Length: 130
Image (cartoon, rainbow, N blue to C red):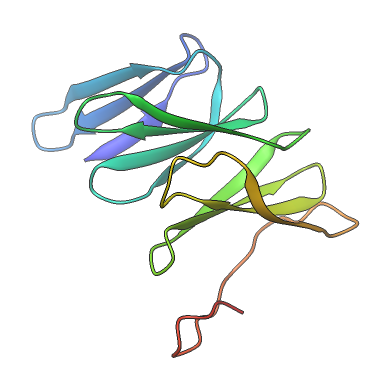
């Protein structure tokens, strides 16, 4: 499957790449900038209102909304070992969110002093990310 967002109608589309048809449409309520597949059943979308929404792909239900950034979110990175989500924003912060429960608060926030373009994570054998 392939996922895409549309600026015009604020929808997230799941495309079946074999048939070439849309198999799922979710109205985001805002323009999506960044999409990250979290597992087979969940997807995270960074929106123009600086929030992150987590959706269940089997039901199309909104699972949680993460609020904390004050500028465009450029990248989402999912850490499957800990069920955490990392977001990178033009507000010069990197935020760590828990997806293992229904909490919507930031676990940790790091102010970089300048806007990060991208981030890469290295994992320690003991499941610690560096």
